[in-house]
Length: 119
Image (tube, rainbow, N blue to C red; front, side, top):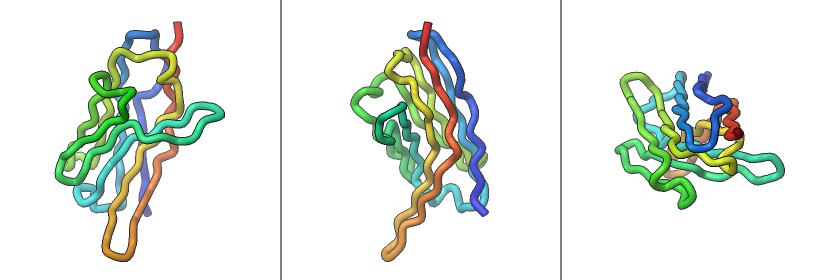
């Protein structure tokens, strides 16, 4: 059974920082690409940042230079360091694990953690 434990969300003032963590169990963590997605009220879920099993990263244009994704395979954990937060970053942030094989893709989601940026 795949389980996610997400933490680090909360209320922060504009310009502040938060660090999200996502611990995953039940999978071979090092073999999975990991990602952080977010969903604001009334909007679709969107990719914020991703990191491959090899450590390559990609970011949505609106977070480049502000957010950093990283992973610690020894701890089965992926992080999202969020700096210079803006009110428009307010959303529920979801951790995602994905592994693409020849005929099958395995995708798992965390339960989400709320991030609110407001003064």
